[in-house]
Length: 290
Image 1 (spheres, rainbow, N blue to C red):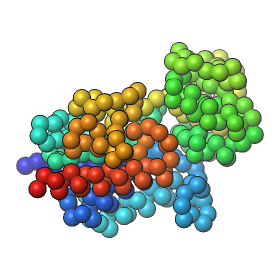
Image 2: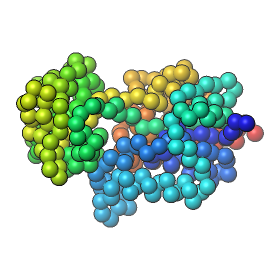
Image 3: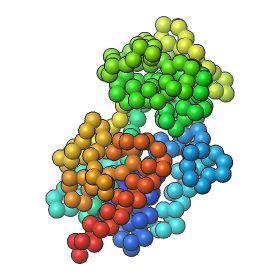
């Protein structure tokens, strides 16, 4: 027998946990689906967030959110949603084969980053490799940095770094450009072999043996995930961002989205606020049906 929930939240980062808190406290049946792939896990330091007297590792903040869910008795399924359909209610299919019916769904998957096959990329995460320019640019002020990517998302990250870094170089890793870049950003289109350094990143080594000195590498290859599921339901998507109104409602009744998957300012504070809005909107929607 399939599980039937009032609300299913896809994603257990700041937006997903925030939404779940509001739905659970309304005494509604809610399940959160998601693994540990939140971009917050890769944040070296969190400083620009209310109430922090000292910097906090992203991993620490992420795990604190999960403990909040546990205290409220919210079920978390560590899996990926691979399909979603709607016919008066939602049916979600997980990669492991589990199917869940839900009266409402909230997308909080974040902006899923594509991985590149570059030696030592994961090894230097949090030690020179970053996934958020706005979050971490401050730590690379007056230093040479690089952005990995070739499209609009990489352009966004590069432009955020320009006013802070000494220099910004775009590395396409052999991929063609998919956006127009200003002349102030140097572009290298050669395939990348590996990242090098001791405790922290110091250089990028290309397949032809050349090297580029860089204190930081910002990964911005692209986004995927929630937008694909939204398109399955016929929901409006602009680029890779799910379109919502001010209450985080999509054009499909009962479907909401919050956090990085909606675009805008990719910050923890924004994700938490939007998650709260989405959670409250879902509660109003569910109560209007009774």
